[in-house]
Length: 403
Ligand SMILES: Cc1cc2nc3c(=O)[nH]c(=O)nc-3n(C[C@H](O)[C@H](O)[C@H](O)COP(=O)(O)OP(=O)(O)OC[C@H]3O[C@@H](n4cnc5c(N)ncnc54)[C@H](O)[C@@H]3O)c2cc1C
Image 1 (cartoon, helix red, strand yellow):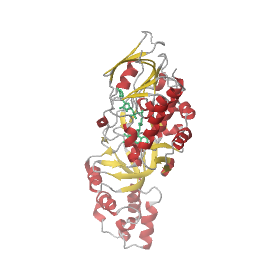
Image 2 (cartoon, helix red, strand yellow):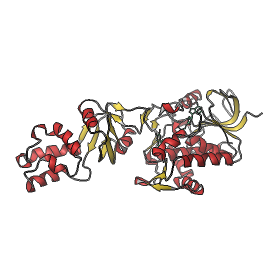
Image 3 (cartoon, rainbow, N blue to C red):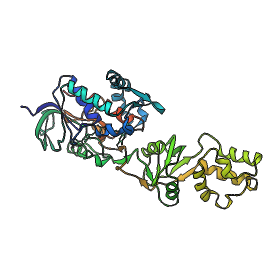
Image 4 (cartoon, protein in one colour):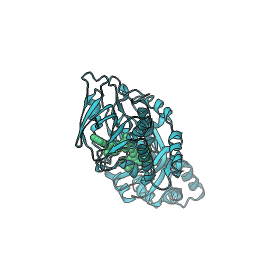
């Protein structure tokens, strides 16, 4: 029967293509069903079009999951070095940006072309524009008999079903269907709370007005919540805060929680102000700090933190008052009103709970032949190539264990 496959992969994104090519290379008959007109759309838009495809330093602590041990097996079965070896085999040029992040030299298209070429040579069939409405296990007790899927292009049967439908971010791409969560629930898996993540934060009130006034300004900071701190740059936007430090923090931040910004993480503001008070007492706080922070930011902050003394020379400040103001630069407390949501988020935090998924194979316990891979699961990586590495590693192990 022509519509019978060994493996059907639902979703032709990073994780789906990786599972498909791995299973295909093992001689299995594989079909990738993709709802969009083209596979791999997120790969193409990733990393500003250059795809930050992995990181030189991949450790389990770069991933957030209810079970922090869950990622270990897959990450060690298929490492960043394995993926880099494939990139090298295809002659794709890349370079390391900061923090071990690897980006294509030319274009993210190179990575997608590599994956589809590998799929093609492994005999994988990719079916675009194929929306799946319904999945059914062939046997009532969900043991081994495989699955049928009903789609707008007909009915397909398979022994193994790999769910690689991704998350909910960037709904305008058309692939954020949430169908993978429905399948997971259908087969008894639970779904942990999902939130837009790796996403800019929004502000209201006076801090919104400040950010709006200086949107486009970027400063190196340490941004923290109670459990985590990131030392990277922060960008002021029309709606609030963004930049790597804020995107990273969004993986750990929850609505209503305060964040703390250290605007001078590498120096002591107190030393600067007291030093100027003793050596250049005619200067103002503004001029003392304008060598280390953007003037526009200082201008805005001054109206909140020392409003009546903007033109007052340092000699007229008591040391205790300067210490208080210096403290604010290291401990700026802000409570974001929310995030920009899935519209601009890079990933979905949360998803299919991993407690009933084998960390070694990605197969669902008790539902033989059903596999979950990639972002659909409750695994979220830090910014920096970690989410793609999770897609490659989890996709690979599923591709190795389908039969
Ligand atoms: C703007 C942006 C930039 C990013 N940049 C980076 C980066 O540089 N580095 C990094 O590591 N990560 C980055 N990410 C995150 C990364 O893209 C994802 O984590 C990764 O693509 C997840 O892979 P996946 O295969 O699980 O899901 P996806 O890549 O989202 O693929 C899921 C696929 O399933 C398809 N699909 C959904 N529902 C159905 C259905 N019912 N039937 C058939 N097909 C379906 C979708 O159309 C899609 O093609 C970025 C994300 C965004 C949005």
